[in-house]
Amino acid sequence: MPTHSTEITLSTSRTLGLVAIASGENYEQANQALEAAGFSRLSNGAYTASLADDQAARRTASTLVAHAHEHGATIVTSPRPYLGDIGTDIAARLPGTWSAQLEIYSLPLWQEDLWYGLWEAGEIYRALADHRVPYASVLKDGKGTELLLVERPGHSSGYLIGALTDHEKEDVRDDPTTPPSMVLPAEPDQATSVIAHTFLPAYQRALYQRDLNTVLSALERIREEHQSFQLVKSSGRYTAGVPLSSRLIDSMERAFADHAWIAYRVVLEHAPELLARCQPATTPWPDDAAALIRLRAALADSEEAWHESNTLSSDLHAIPRTLHTHEWSHVRAQLGLDALPAIETWLTDSDVFERQARAAAPDEQAALSTASPRMLTARPAPPPAPRAPTTHR
Image (cartoon, rainbow, N blue to C red; front, side, top):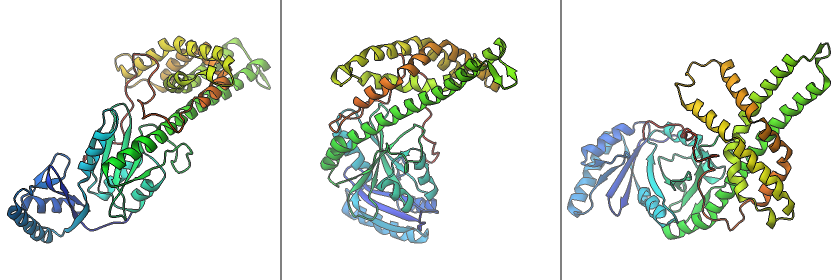
C-alpha cells in the first residue's frame, strides 16, 4: 500500500456543511489544525464547519489553509459529496431496514483492519491493496448482512461495493464462492438499483454456496473419521500385533465421537437454512423427500445436545475457564455419542442432501439477502465474534 503525506480531505454535505477528514501518519496534527480553524468534531472522527454564512465560511476556509500549512498538512478538495451522505441515501432506498455508518481509517495501518472481514477478490480488494482508503461507509440490514462502500480510487466519481463477513474464510482470491465487488454509479438512485438487483442477489448466491460447501466439508471430515474407525473395528486389531479389546474399542469410539461432534456442530449451524429451501417435488428426484424428512428429524434429535453444548460453552460456572484440554474432549465425546445416530443419518443421506441443496440454490432472480443462517432452535447460541476490533473507530 502506498504511503501519503498527511492530508485533510474536504467534501460538502447537504446537512453538515463542509466536512473535513484527516488522514496520514500525522493525522493528529491535521486534527489540531481543524480545531484551530474552528471546525467541530463529530463522533465518527470527521470535522464539520457551517456553510450557511458565505463570509464566515470563507474566513473558516482561509484560516484552515493557514493552520494546515503550520501543521504540515495538505488540503485536498474532493469532487464528490460527503460519503456519509451517500451511504445514508443508499441505505434509505434499499428495501428493508438498512443503516449506514461512516468509518474513518486515519492511519494507513487502520485500513488493514478491513482485511479481516472483506469477503471479496475483485476491484475493491485491489483498491484496498494499492490505494489509501481513509474512510468507508458500512451498510447493515440488521440481519447479518454488511456491505462496504468506498469511493472508487483513480476516478472522480463512482463507488465500489463489496461484502463483509464474520465467517471464517479461505483466501478470497482462491475461493470460487467469493462474491465479486461491483462498480456503482454516482447517482444514489442508480447505485441502489445496482445493489438491490445485481449485487445482493449475487451475494445471496455466494452466501448459500459458502454454507453448502461448509456443511459438505464437515460431513466429509466425519465420513473419513468414521470409515477409519469402522475399518479398524472390523479388522479386530488395533495394529498388526495388538488385538482389539472392548476397552480399546470404547476409547476409539469416544475419540471418533469427539472429532465428529466438532464437525457436526457446523452441520447443526448451517444445514437448517439449507434444508428449508429444498423442495424435492420440484426436482427430478421427488422421492428424495423421505431422506430429507430423516435429515430434518436427525437435526431435531440433536437439539438437546446442541443446546447443552452452547450452554456449556458460554456458562463459566458450568465450564470453568481453566478446563483442561482432555476434559473438553470428554465433554465433546459425550455430546458426539449422544448425537451419533443423527450423525450417521447425515452420513447415509448426504448425497441426497447435496443434490437437493444444489437444486435449491438461489437463481439469478434471487430476492434481497435474508438473515445469516439461523441456529438450530429458538434458543440461539451466543452470536459469533465480530470482525477484528478497531479501537480508533
